Amino acid sequence: MASGVLTIAGVWALQDIAVSSPDALKDPKNPFAASKAKQAAH
Image (spheres, rainbow, N blue to C red):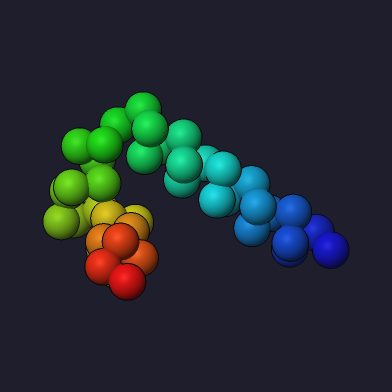
């Protein structure tokens, strides 16, 4: 149960990052940028 809560919190954190600093998601060195790009491609 705790892991599910942590996952949801992580998703919220990523959404906050995406909204507050879109440039960070374009940074090729950012590991989250690659996963976001893959999600957007589908």
